[in-house]
Amino acid sequence: MLNTSEILTTIEMIREQKLDIRTITMGLSLLECIGGNTPEKVYDLVTRRAEKLVSTGEDIENEFGIPIVNKRISVTPVALLLAGGQDPVEIALALDRAADATGVNFIGGYSALVQKGATEADLRLIRSIPEALARTNKVCSSVNVASTKAGINMDAVKLMGEVMVEAARLTEDQDGMGCAKLVAFANAVEDNPFMAGAFHGVSEGDAAINVGVSGPGVVKRALEKVKGEPFDVVAEVVKKTAFRITRMGQLVAMEASKRLNTPFGIVDLSLAPTPAVGDSVAHILEEMGLERCGQHGTTAALMLLNDAVKKGGVMASSSVGGLSGAFIPLSEDIGMINAAAAGTLTLDKLEAMTCVCSVGLDMIAVPGDTPASTLSAILADEAAIGVVNQKTTAVRLIPAKGKKVGDWVEFGGLLGRAPIIPVHPESAEEFISRGGRIPAPINSLKN
Image (cartoon, rainbow, N blue to C red):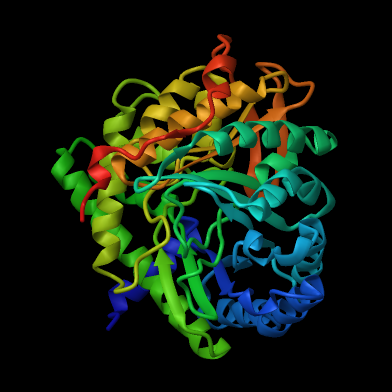
């Protein structure tokens, strides 16, 4: 039961510290659409089931005074629907039309799961990704190329580097926006409400409501009150703050579930930043005493933050899931944007930080002439971190055509802007061309 003090604190967090619900995401199974006329079946199912998603979110927002930034849909990985030679791009176009009809911000699930091997349908979908993302506005795509149980599918890793290059080429006039809607995973989760990686897993039911919260500004403000205190005090403050944030997410999730007559799935308690001043994960780390995010000490500070967020959040909800931790998307975090522009935050340091945070190398713009093999090698490194550490990692890289180090890409909105940062110039072509599969690590043998 919330008391008066908690209510007033929550109101202050919303009004002054940029606390919001980042997304209500409705997950929908499309397995009943397999067969003839799949695009039409997909459109009809999505528009019927998600017809009231946006209006319900707006009603909750107005009644409770809680900002809900995005309303989104995730669907069954589309590669599973491609029986009988179905054109995957036609399904992407149907999903985009359904997103427009329902009014959601994004729809995710143009996806394939190929961590151990790829079917012909998987390969057709992956090869179609650049065209699908270039011809749609709201469709997001993801491919799982590795897992702790299966190892790393290096053939898929090689192909994804080529797909990133082609997606950037086809959306060159938008600074490579196609790549901003594409993520490659290791250990992808089935109930992630955040884009671009959301899809509705095959072990899920027909539908679910998943909510993603935010609140970096709230955490930073709380830490301002314990300046100079020991790290155990810092951890305790973050835990208590994460508890309050997650409680709000739980309230919204359960209310949306009831009103939409859809089962409540999970609350993802990830700290999701935005380009707005006062809403930065990097600024939380700097509040702990770092002069600038990316310097020595950054990884330790991020580990503390990520762990404390999880510990506080799990006490506030019995259904914590998704990714849950702290995101570090370069273009979407004003503190990280500034640190990268200053040269303090580099690709290598970002990779080190992904060992202890949620997801991975996210929304990072690199020179447009970066070879596909280099992009694949970056993905392989990140997948290795996820596989060995039994965690989700991901890569969302934007090889911006015609851009070089020091230039910028501009996406606007939550996707923000980012400086082009350098990659290592040495060739990875021979390494990536080997193909095959990097075997699962010994720690995968747990039976």
